[in-house]
Amino acid sequence: KQEVTQIPAALSVPEGENLVLNCSFTDSAIYNLQWFRQDPGKGLTSLLLIQSSQREQTSGRLNASLDKSSGRSTLYIAASQPGDSATYLCAVPNSGGSNYKLTFGKGTLLTVNP
Amino acid sequence: DAGVIQSPRHEVTEMGQEVTLRCKPISGHNSLFWYRQTMMRGLELLIYFNNNVPIDDSGMPEDRFSAKMPNASFSTLKIQPSEPRDSAVYFCASSLAGGLMGGDEQFFGPGTRLTVL
Image 1 (spheres, rainbow over the protein chains, first blue to last red):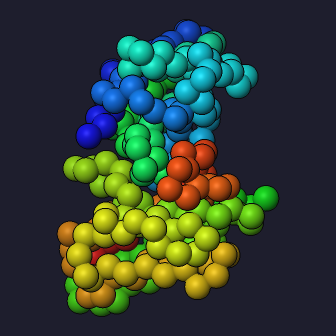
Image 2: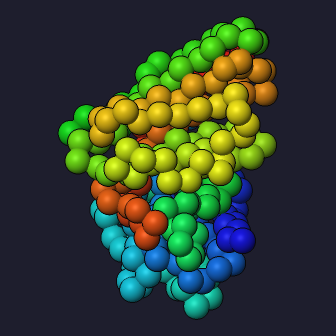
Image 3: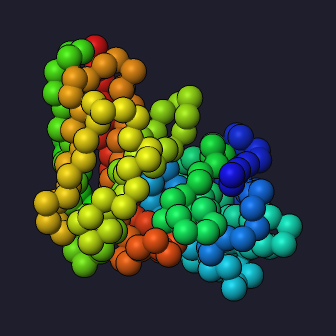
């Protein structure tokens, strides 16, 4: 059974700092990995999806990397801003015949202080 | 595109009442998912539809929960009778293709916050 772990559970940084969020998964036979952002009381916003054949994916100040062999992904946020404050979740599809089913980590609560 | 639309955004009801949550997926998406999010259990997949057909309902907690997708642009999740332990945020999500070999990017709606008193 796939398990996804996110470290740290919470992170507080001053504005302008570069930061890294970590995601690890136990079953490396994944098709892709998706990073989401969730604001309080809101839904999930898809940030980046990395296919298993890719090493990294970039969108603006966000860069996500994927190392399947070691079961790890990182989300790098450059020049953090208070508006980046949210919970960040990573999710991977199950392997085998049910890869529509995402397993989510519990998230990292990020606070960027002005 | 308006994204995934859910209604109502908030629902407060009393134990024993019927609750119906509604979802409109992104136009052209063939897969629809219902999730539940709680502090204790995080995000859980309840049911997955592909081309309006339920493919996997193994996450539906019990017979009190039912879901339908009568057409490509509408789905409902019904709880009857509701119980306090059903209080959670219910999300609907859709993706472009899917099927058993899915793994496409999923797009989530804003959720329905359900409180059962």
